[in-house]
Length: 227
Image (tube, rainbow, N blue to C red; front, side):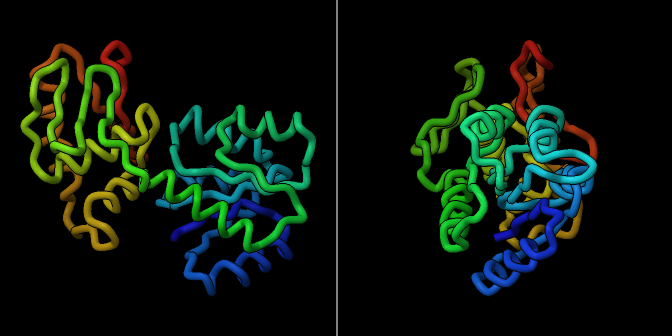
């Protein structure tokens, strides 16, 4: 599991590394809010641990930026000394998925991260995924748009499932490659080719496209009236 820690306290960073790395986590760290946004949008992470009191850009603004500007769907756990109800409500309102107050238990942090990642990976699988006039039934492997069957390739099917799980949120290129090919994505620009093929099926026969590319960032589904 690949975790991004956005935290400026070196002692807390050291404690997180000391506890989480032996459990098998791969950790990246950003020591201010601006670097945190850059790291979060520039590479795949299974979850983000975000402090609120950060130099450059505080954690609330980091979370708001990732959710609203970049449409990043990566689970975010806020880790902070701010323990009022107002602080917690604010955190959830800007897009946090969980909130853990310092001082905290490291085993509890591990358990919360694993729960967030399970939910993000949709391990309790929905059998039917819908967004706008798109419908995909995982129990039958059939997808339709506006009631019309979509003739998907096996890879196109995996891509569409990944997009629907986070819609209308953004899925980064790295995350999508991992969804399709696991930890061994092809060296070539295979994803671009498969996205092109999916567009021919998903968008070309219809008046308005739904699959949008955010250059240098990733992909997302939009409602036809947003396209």
